[in-house]
Image (cartoon, rainbow, N blue to C red; front, top):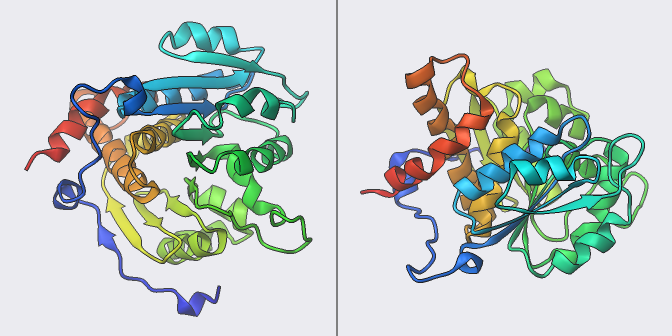
Length: 307
């Protein structure tokens, strides 16, 4: 994709835009299945909390059913922290990732989940990329959100393994990099990405066939067709460990409910920022915790939907 062919117009994500793009709602007499089943795949011995943050956020965003797949070494801990979830323990590599046979454990869920989030708290990027590569063909009925270590798949060869061929998803997924992660994924200097985030978000979205939410003080969300949204809001308090895991979980929860990848990303970014603004009024701009962000989301969803 020639960078000169990119277009710059974007839609600002604000209160009026959100009201005009309402989230799908389950029927009043619906059950948890109709609210959507989300699978969160992640965590590791060193970072079991990331998957807990993401899973909590997915439920706070309105998903009705939750399964967590995490390392066998921390599965019991995660299960105790998330009594709402079914928790699967996966075999781990020495470097903290998951072994390839994890696909066999996850395969029965492939046609039962509405959305899957892969990445929070995962380690061993090569093993994670191999696992994502093996899982993707089995997930064509689910919305896929890749975060953190799982995004490393795009830094490798294309799906057919041709050396030098760029990676391109067969079906669109969501990726949620910040500028440093985008630099790692593309090989472009971080300073260059910070100078022109909208251009790099759009180029990546088209090249990878993905909805790319390039996070920052101003976040740009770009779709493969060139559509772009811009969000400015929140505060520096959101720049804290676990905040990105929470955002990814919100996006996955909204997608499980039936929101498109673009809508889930736009609403997720907005709700995450609004939650930071709410917390700042109570705790100050610095010092609130990532675990507190998701608790603000249900009320903010209701407020944002009001005319």
